[in-house]
Image (cartoon, rainbow, N blue to C red):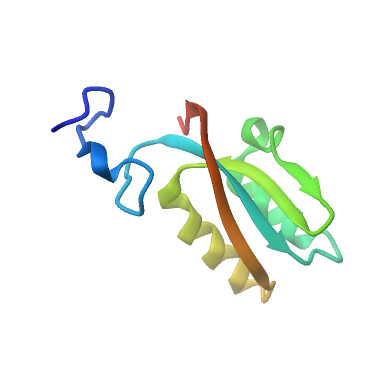
Amino acid sequence: MMSDSANPPYQTSEIGTPLDYTENLYRFYFEIRDTDGTAERLLKEFLGDKRAERMQRLTHGFEMDLPIQSVPDLIRIISAKNIAIYQVVRYAKVDGTWR
């Protein structure tokens, strides 16, 4: 069964999985120790000004909206600066798309 809402079409069973190459957005929590603001700066640069407005700083990390496929890229960027990521949690799908 093909999904009519994804373009290009994807198997419905792939939506919300690591095989999801759509631009659907999900709320993610990144648990990161950010003592000097470097992690926050990297996250905002990755998100861009408009998307960074929805990013929320929490006691031990950040919440933001991302497509599933962008998470490994963001982890590589943060890790390249020797910043430890203690966990990444995907919450629910949110409204909107990456573009």
